Image 1 (cartoon, one colour):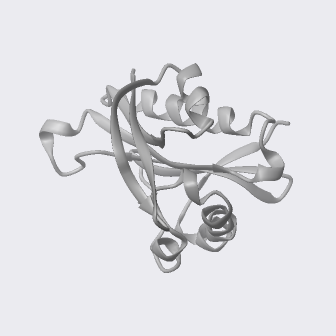
Image 2: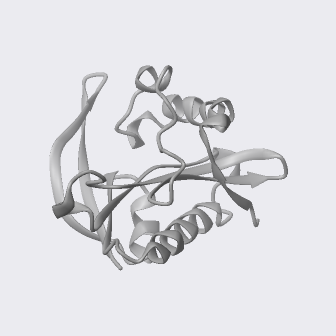
Image 3: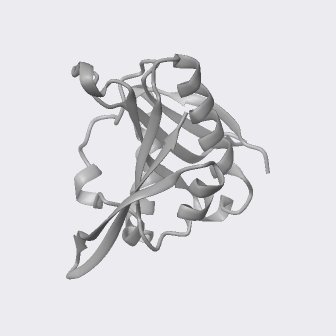
Length: 164
């Protein structure tokens, strides 16, 4: 299935939340944020070339999201890095290439900026999405044991990097 991708803005917050909040409940063991963290949070990015959120639409329905933020937007020594975060695809649309479309578009946009040399991300160590990130060239560079604690359970968190 091919989705239509477009940049989302703060005006899309209701649709963004309508997709993400159920995901935070259903897939709680794949996120580092809890539903209560997101309920009243502002839109995650600033609608700028180095701070954006992409949405994947199937028909008129938002089916997937991913965000990117330059690290060090106000720190010269780490402006060469960015963070891919809040990658999510609706369960009924998984396995159809939407996540890959989102990641590829994000990478292309970041490359076009010209001054970001690496994209970092964190993923729960057991999350199947890790294999997708590896297909795009992301490499693991650390594992934080018990990095997440949710409802009495610990999850290991892996950090990955893609050098552009």
